[in-house]
Picture: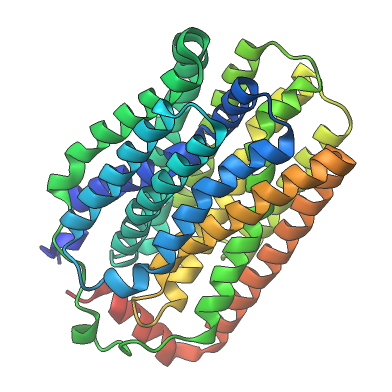
Length: 395
């Protein structure tokens, strides 16, 4: 029977996708942003990594509090405040004349980005068939940064530099604010469908930690892909185009996850995707050439996001209260904070080959933990499965 529940309308999914795109747009263009900041202020990798960490510190603060407001505040108001903080922070950073003012602006931008992404995650967690909806949500989250990676290097950064880049990103955020009108005022009433209020199963926190570890190390490598390309003396325009290829790859990964669903379970897809990521790290560690870099950009991001789509679905199913799935945004933020900072430190002191080992290790830990949660959910038996299904399908 077709549901008329607001959260399950197509318009709600579209608006969730728009908020998700706003929440990830800075991360999507992070290689360009860190490169522009590093060139503008003459920074090393460690200092450039601090710009990413500043953004994700604000992001983490906002998302960590999401379980307190996600069921209490009007979602349209939350979206408006989040987008205003993003745009304001970017404008402030663009007007800043020092590295430290850019850091401050990125913290504010991060708070806004965290609010919008946590809202997006909470919305999709309330929808029917969350595995497939999370995969769908990831698609526009990659399309918007892909377009920007193609356009920004030649038409913005080359002409106006760092300031032009920050202003352009602020305008993108303002444009995504048009979708606020489609956001429902609130989500599903979990108390009415028999969930356990504020209680949470231990598995949901293990699943969140799995996402944190998996995302963290690889996100750290992603942040420095523009700097990594310089080891091979690659043309900046070619690097921008190959980074756009990388984001096209991140579109293909979630599309494949949405089509495949759970036909081969949730463990095998995560293992396959992680093996591909590790192989691309080996390829990059063997020396940077345009061919190797292009192959890595075509494979690594798609495999990475293919796994993340399944990990988000696992978190949604493990969350019996409906309050903790929004914390996946916190897991992503905290992972990005330690990932960018540690990869930058490791690359500065020991080189990128050692950084790839670190990123690969965290990915393996994350996948192992997520697969354990999948195993636990299977062992809970038919009664628990019915409870989960009633939470997802009840009107």
